[in-house]
Each structure stands twice: as C-alpha cells, then as structure tokens.
Length: 443
Ligand SMILES: [Zn+2]
Ligand SMILES: [Zn+2]
Ligand SMILES: [Zn+2]
Ligand SMILES: [Zn+2]
Ligand SMILES: [Zn+2]
Image (cartoon, rainbow, N blue to C red; front, side, top):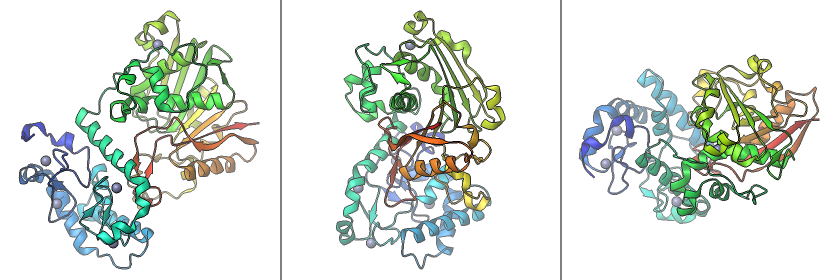
C-alpha cells in the first residue's frame, strides 16, 4: 500500500476528509499537519510527498489561524460566521480565489459539537465526522446518534468512489417485466427492476451508488408524472414525450443522456419518441445527441424509438420560445428561492460549500416561464425548507397566474442515495440530491 507512484496529486486532491490520509485515503494512525492543523497523513512519507502541493495553503491557513482569533462564539451561527470570515481572510492572504477543495478544507474545522471548542481530539469512533472536547461532551451529544450512520455512509461512499474511480456506471438498463404496473416504493426496488446485476449485490449502496445517481432524475420525473395522473399503468397519453429540464443540477446530464433515454423507454411502454431539452448556464457544452439513437439497446431499436436530446447553455427565458412545447418541465435542485437573495462577491463566499449547487444566475427572468397551462412543473430540492421556499418564490413571481400545488412537497422516494454533508446546519447535517419533490400546475 506504500507505492508512492500510485498516488497522483491530480487524483488524491479531488477528495478531502478531516480524518483520512490526504494522499492514500486510509484512516488509521493519522498525523495531523502541526502548522495548519487541517490535513492529516498516515506517514511522514505521505506528508513529504504532498508538501509541495500543500505548502502554499498551509502557510496561508496557519497565518489565518494565528491572526484571526475566535472570541465570542456562543452559538452555531457565531461559529459559521467565524468560519466564513476565515474563508474570506484566507482568500486575502492567498491573494486569489480558493480552489473548491480549499473551500472544503477551510470549512471542515474540527470543533466540539457541544461547546464549539476548536481543534478537539476526540472523534466519534463510528463516523469520524464529528468531534468532542471531552468524554463528558461526547456523552451529552445524544442528538448525534440519528445522523451518525448517515455521516459514516457519506464518508465511506466518498472514499469508495475515490478508490474505484469516479468513472463509468456500466449500466445496462434491462427491460422491466410487463407485470409491473406502477413504480415501486423506493429507488432501490426500482433499480432492482432496471438492473439485473444489482440483484446480485443486494441493496449494497457502494456497489450501486453511481447507478442510483443516474436513475434518480428520471425516476423523479416518472414519479412526478404518475403522481399527477399523467402516467397510468406505464402508459403516457400519447406516443411522444417532450421534457424541458431547466437549470439546477444538470451539469452531468450530458454524460447520462443514453441511460436517461433507456430508463424512460423501458418504463413507458407506449412511447416511441422522446425529446429532452436541457437548458441552463450550468451546462458546460451545447449541442445535440439525436444522431446517437443507434446507441440505444436492441429492444429500443426494434421499437423504432426516436430520441432527441439537446443542450442549451442559455438562460431559459432567452430560448424557451425556440424549443418544442414541453409535456413536462422539470427543475432539479434549482434553488429558485435564491432569486430573492442579494448576490455580491462577498456573499457568494458565505456559501462556499454550496457554490457548486447554487445557480450562478438568479432566476428572476426565467421563473415566469417555468409554469405553463396544462404542463406540470416537477420541482426537486435538497431540503424541505428549500422546496417550500422555491414554491413560495414561484408563486410570488407568477402572481397573474393561478398556480396550484398538485403534489405537495414531500420526501422523494427516488432521491439520490449518497448522503451529502451540509456544514451550515447542525440540525440537519445531511442532505440528498432530489431529496424533496413537488408538482405544480397552472389551472
Ligand atoms: Zn497515506
Ligand atoms: Zn499544513
Ligand atoms: Zn465541548
Ligand atoms: Zn458518529
Ligand atoms: Zn432500450
């Protein structure tokens, strides 16, 4: 396990965790960098190996730690504010923007869950994700038990994805037996229908996590359509389905389009034509994949299905009139409510962990185009609060229309299964992609 050649900085620098060797990602006998107290290593050897990459951050972080003293931290909010001011100061010292990993390093302070004392030595032995200043405070933290398992899973999945490569799902979407009429109750049972190989690994998340990530968006669409009565016994009311996916979590959809098409065709038995329009500046490319129909499985080819997926990096309101009218509009984790927030260079620093998940633009101009008469709008969000805020925002900006919440916000049975850490919330430290879902309609 100690062949230095196996650890490339471009690879190991993709993942940071408070309690794993920054180079080889093992979790035993760790030494913490005595200067910045941020990175840990399994050995002097790995520390030395990493030094030329760590050096700049280490000096800056050490300087920030020494100069920015914490006093008056009484509440978790004080603590978050302190952490943010550290992030801002770090940027000043480095005289540049922080890399995404540096953000995370800067945010991942080890502080006592109870009294918020810093640099504490006692880790939760199970999840290694929360810290205590003393046995006494560890015993006092009964709240933690409910999150411990998820936090542990969160770390394990990150590390196993890291070890096994972040690459391909190798997901061959099987035919779903015609005896199945309705969606099952959860995403794992749905995966079992779609993927014969998943059965052999049972409900083991580490084996299936990439497939679940790929299923979650499509399953959320199918679920939304079923819930609002547009999909009955796996039949859509016509042979063509046009979907607009707008903003939010669309970054990776360019890679998943083939699976996203197969999943739909194998579920909706009468469908012969499927069009996806994926729109938003979060995409890193524009273009179309209609010529790839031939990459679909033999069953799809025999059905003579047609697909057309086009990707548009514009804002929705600038392009919506040029797109074919949708049967359904979908916003995945779009953060519509961010509309009402002030954006400034300072405040974007307040959400460093979320900088990836928040849209760069605000929704002000596009939001009124999301709801159209007779076209359901499926919304997902990370948390219940967020989806409620999204809906409120949507109604606020569409005052001239009569908008009905046809499916009330609730936990999405088809949410992604990889727990994500929310360092901004002590109460709800874990969230999920597509965690909550709701369907709206203009009546
Ligand atoms: Zn190591
Ligand atoms: Zn250091
Ligand atoms: Zn304490
Ligand atoms: Zn724990
Ligand atoms: Zn197929």
